[in-house]
Each structure stands twice: as C-alpha cells, then as structure tokens.
Amino acid sequence: MSSLSKDLRDSLEELSERVRFSVDISGNPFSCKSCASLPFLRWLRTTSVRIVAKDTLTCIENDNLRVVSISLEDLEASCASAAPGVSLLIVLSVAGGVGLCTLIMLLFLYTNRWRLRWYYYSIKRRLRDDGESTYDTDRYRYDTCVVYADADLNWVAHELVEQVETDWALSLFVYDRDSQAGFPIAENIVQSLETSRYVLFVVTPDFCDDKWCDFALNMALLRDHKSLVMLYIKPIVHDCASRTLRALMNPRTRCTLVEWGDGEYAQSLFWQRLHDTLLPTSDSDMLLYRLAPCTHRPLLLSE
View 1 (cartoon, rainbow, N blue to C red):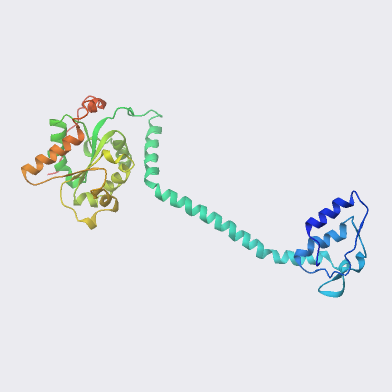
View 2: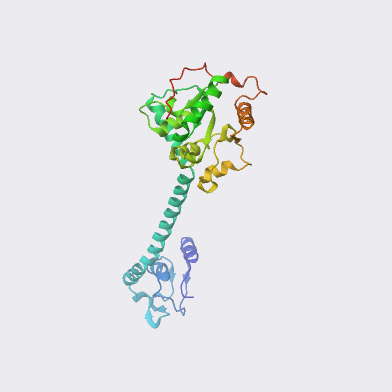
C-alpha cells in the first residue's frame, strides 16, 4: 500500500478510542511526493493510533528516504503552486455557467421583446394616469382600430370610415384623428390596440415600408389572432413584406383575410365580408360591449 485511505484512517481513529492496538504497516513503500498523499502524511504526524516503527517507514520515490523526514511545508507549497490549473478550470466552469445563463436570458429577452415593449408602454401610461385605467376592461372604447400607412389615409377616410362609421355605426380608432397629442407614437399605438375589439390592417406596398405599421403588426400579434383582420387593398410583392406579414398572409392563419377589388361586385363582396366579421349575425349581443358613439373631429386628408 502506498497510503491509507481516509475511510480506513477514520476507522482506526474511532477504534483507538475503545481498544488498545497497534498498526504495523512497515515494509510498505509510501508515496511521499504526491499531492494526493498529503492528507495521509499529515495523519501520520498527528494520529493517536500507535504505528509500529513509524520512524522507519520509507518513501516509494526513494527507499532510503524516511517518511518522517519529508517536509510537509514544502509539499504543501508545491501542491499549492499546481492549484492554479485547477482554479483555472473552476473559473472557466463558472464563466461558462454565467455565459450560458446570460445567453438564455438574452434569448428570452429577444423572443419576448415585443411583449416586453407592450408591457412597458402599457404600464407607463397607467403610471402617468395615477394607476387608473383609461378604459373598462369589459367594454372596449372602439369597435376596431385601423393600422395604415400615411399614403393610404385617403382610402381610409373616403372608403373605410364612411362605410364603417356612417353606414354601420361602428366606432373606429384612426391614428391621424384619434391619437392623443403630446404622447409618443408607440404609446398611442399600444393604447389603440388595448382599447379596440378588432384590429384592421390596411395592407398596401406603403404599409410594408412603414416602420410604425410593422411595429403595430408585431404588437397586435400579442392579441388573439381571430381579432386581426387583413385588408388587402393593393397588390404587394411577397419579398418586400416582413416575415411577420408573410406569416399572416398564409391562408392557414387564423386571422381574417379580405381583399379589395376594382369592380363594383368585388367591392360589394369586400364590404359584405368585412361586415360579417365585425358584425356577426349569429350573436345578437355582440355589440353590447360598445360605448355610445363618440363625436370625432374632422379627419385631415392629403390632396
């Protein structure tokens, strides 16, 4: 044996408290220069167990070298100088764990970036309003909000607003008319999405190039997809659309897809489809959630 294991040493110490005995381990060349043998060598110096011929025990590295003549201080120093390699391994392991946790956190933040932004603007507005909600969660302020590019404002004003508000008596949130002055655009968009039962997207080539339309589109995805209505007013190039918009253009999506046409018949089908979406005849109580129609200020149109 080149050393005695810790379990054996502990057993000998426990036994020596009850029984008088001696341990004869002479003739065993012990390891004296290995860091693993350091605990055994310390035990030989301090144990109360009677070791036969302790002073004559020799080292395996040199048969003439006595175990008792080994300098534990020098061995401890040499083992300590070798410890940085182990310490470096520990440091690298800790750094790897921290890096993995950081990566997971960054992945979580990236995956939920739109939801976090929604909460940020929503909570910010509530805090500014002294914690009082600006709307009743059981009753929407608007039947639907309209997301459109600036270039499509004329169509929204002349076609959509006239049909939906005038003929169907529904309430629309139109950004150029109903947004509150003095508040950030993003905050107004989030408020309009929170306070509207449906969201209409006026999809045109200009919609694809508008960063705020893309912002509203990603924010609206946090809602139930059944409340999203895609109005395709003009043909768009598939490659120009964002990945989110292309996903919603998929026929398998749960949102409603309504396409505008040039002919009178195609447009009548468009309005019928939109009417059936916003005013489902199968539920006569669907409109009970609305507040009394509000008076809108005139919508500014571009020439």
